[in-house]
Length: 53
View (cartoon, rainbow, N blue to C red):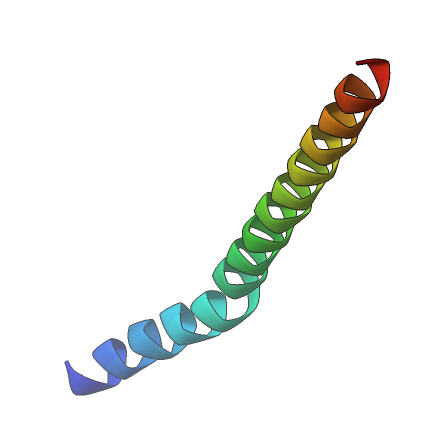
């Protein structure tokens, strides 16, 4: 059954390249944006606290 194995491997390779790759890229991007937003929020909060005192 080498041909069937080749077909299965090819299908998984295509799925892996397109869907899983895009999914992980999106997750990494979202985590990066979330991290940047949290860091920005934290720094602005600290600035406001310092300004209050």
